[in-house]
Image (cartoon, rainbow, N blue to C red; front, side):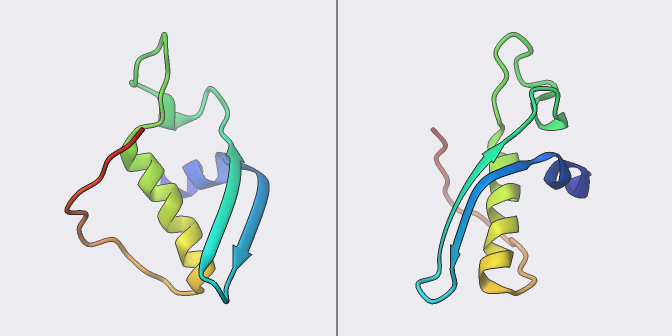
Length: 78
């Protein structure tokens, strides 16, 4: 499922600065994407779990390492 989600993303702009360890990525996600299923059909939103999945994907690209997320002790989504 993770690969399906990542393949559905359309990258509009990607800027990875490996020296500064900074990443800026602008994406477009199709309205019929699996990430919106079950989250308020009349007003879809991107769940925090999917936001983290996408962020970790680009962090792996930035660091050029295969990292995993073990724990998130605190998070706030807006």
